[in-house]
Structures are given as structure tokens and as C-alpha cells.
Length: 93
Image (cartoon, rainbow, N blue to C red; front, side, top):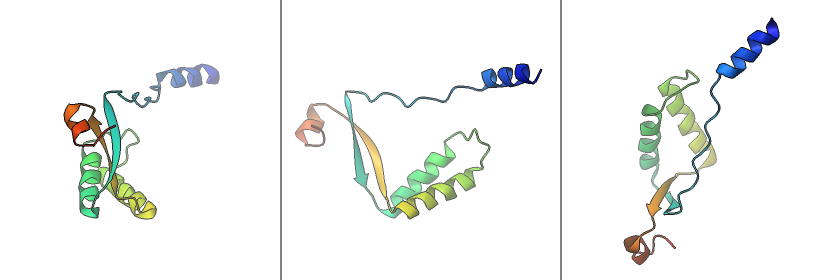
């Protein structure tokens, strides 16, 4: 009976989401930004995200800020389309 219950529980869990494949029409850049900008993006990302672990949004913001301060990384990832304008400006290859 225990095997039956555990196997049915395992099947009811959703599979972890795979990260999307990179789009060949976009290039991802990492841009260093001031600390205030990274704070705003961390707060926005935490407020508009779903927390399946049941973690509070405030705790998620605190964890994100702690992780950034420990690593010292104050940069953002930006996806830029590869088109004539961005090539002319030298933003993409």
C-alpha cells in the first residue's frame, strides 16, 4: 500500500520547468547597473512571481538582496533583438 501511495504522489507532482531555449533572433547581454536599479528589479521580480514553495514575498526579496550583496553582482541580463538598428548601434554582433 505504501508503494501505491508514494507512486501516485510522485505522479501528481508537476515536472520541473525547463529553461526556454535561447532565441537566435535575440542576444542576451549583462549590463552593470547602480544598486538602486537592481533593488527595483529584485522587488518587481519578487512581487510578480509565483512562489510554489509557499515562501512569502518579503522573504523572497530579502533572499534576493542577500544573494546579490554576498556575490557583489549588481548587473542585469537584457535580451536585445538582432536587427539592423541594434547592429548599427553596435549592441549585437
